[in-house]
Image (cartoon, rainbow, N blue to C red; front, side, top):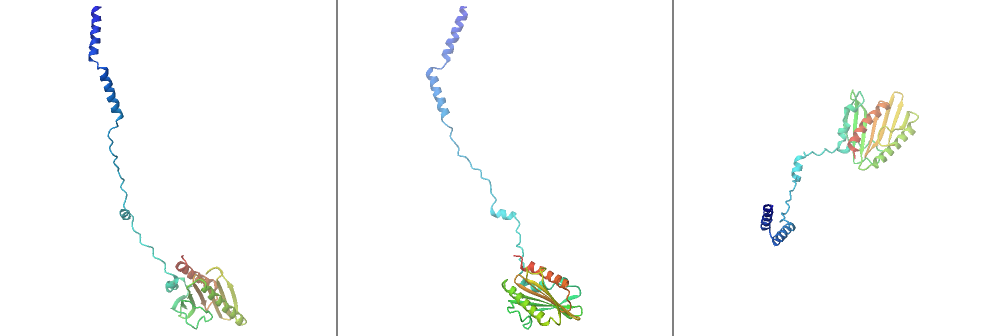
Length: 235
């Protein structure tokens, strides 16, 4: 029992001798707290930039498309528009193309900035029809030309109504709205037809001197009108 008490006392004394003093413990605590409160030196953040494609590289990726060719206005392309033989009725062919002579359509006061007169022939080279186009630099003057042409049609009906059988009507199959007419005339073996219409800045007249076939004449005028629309009225 005495030996056990001495052993316990020796262990307590040895432990006290090895333990740090109160001052040392206090100093260690202060150092630990100071170390905890002092932040580590900060390193400035490094910015990592995402590479952006430059305009030059973007253009290199995108293939360059050529600009779409602009359609020529009708007044610059009329000879080509008028010269489609596939538009003609069967049995007809193109003749000559030139300007409207001064002695033709004298009742139309303003003859425009340009004009075209296309002859249409039969298979034996006899002129059977004319296509007349007056070109204006605005969209009002062709309407005035149309009205003047109507006045001439009314005069013909009045002056020759006892000799010829006339049939006159306005149509909406071609031309601008309410700006197209067709007139047929017949006397014995003589037959003729005239069709006039406004399209954009143009006044167009189609006249056959050997037939009064209204369906055929309107069908040809429609084909020509569609070509004019595609060339001159796309805007």
